[in-house]
Image (tube, rainbow, N blue to C red):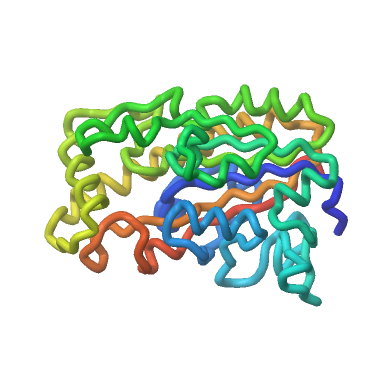
Length: 294
């Protein structure tokens, strides 16, 4: 299978739990492949994306990566770092996927919405890996208290700009597009599901637990956890609709698509909340992959 001429769309659904994806209606993602249960290498944004950008995607726990009629052991593999005789979609020798595609004549485009992708922060190394990077989220300086972060979101969600990103890609001879999607990250609000007074105290409490990292098994009732998981499910379903528009705008192009979470979140299963610690709800993530225009 020759994938060297395919354009690329790599999407990360920030903080999306695997069970959220199981519960969600995602018809556009399901056209790529069945939902895969995978294991990520990082427990928060920076290490997870560092792994992905060197070809180390979340690993399916049953089988390989389906790409149309074929299944590969790895979609990308650095042959310089770790040669393999297994079936690989694309092998590369550069430091990162972006280096590889740039050297192959692709325009390398990134877009993000969580603060690790804010180019205004001098310590953020990820945006500089791209020829051009478009950041739509708030800055760290705007983060403030939990109350300030619990807000409705629209233009600062990356996939609100799906049409713009599609136009940008269509204007390139060949492209590699990375999209970080923050809709599935707390506070889970989208243009279709703005903030309501009933969930404000739940989200403020969840932010406090995220920030403190303290253990509190009784912080939420089972019903309240169900509400929070429902918000993330609705945020994923909104992202699926936006991605459907993006995929449709690329009709006529041959595109390799990978969509996965960078990590999940714990909602008190072992007494903690959020991520950046090892727990199965954090390391087990959803993944879809496939080919458009084949």
